[in-house]
Amino acid sequence: MAVKIRLTRMGKIRTPQYRIVVADSRVKRDGKVIENVGIYHPKENPSRIEVKTERIQHWLSVGAQPSESVKRLLCKTGDWQQFKGLPAPAPLQTAEAKADKTELYSGALKDAGIDPTKAAEEAEAKKSAKKSASKAKKSSEKKDESAKTEEVKAEEATDAPAEAKAETPGDEAKASEDKGE
Image (cartoon, rainbow, N blue to C red; front, side, top):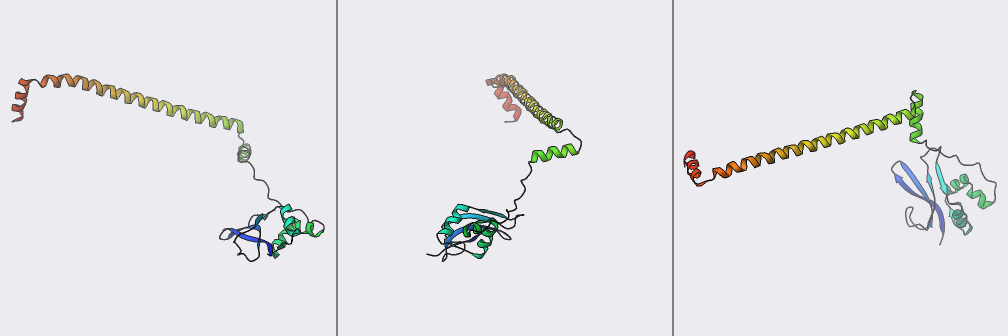
């Protein structure tokens, strides 16, 4: 079985991302692979190349042949020179680490002439004021609701005895005469 180290395409349209894989040479480009040994993202600035060096060296030592594109990538990472015993190339460029959002925010506040610690305290005070206001509003709504239910119960209690008096036998005849029955 002829084994190749090649790229398999991943990602979306116009944003390719590749995996560096070890596969049988007769298998389709995106077919079954033996092992994933790295990734390559060409659209990032600078391009992102991550390779498992010891696994690449193993596969090269047992006779796996890299494709032309993978061979160029291995030359950039220094794995091909290591396999051939040549001097290593210059180190790869790496992307700068993204700054922390809180640090960016505090830096912007300082540029605007605002003390970040005071701004954070004010923001927390506003949040706590909003929470306490919403709690007070909810409790007043509950009190109003309970007062209304008590009023309804009191009205029902006063109406109930009057209705009981109206249902005496003599009153039924008068009520039916008033209705015209």
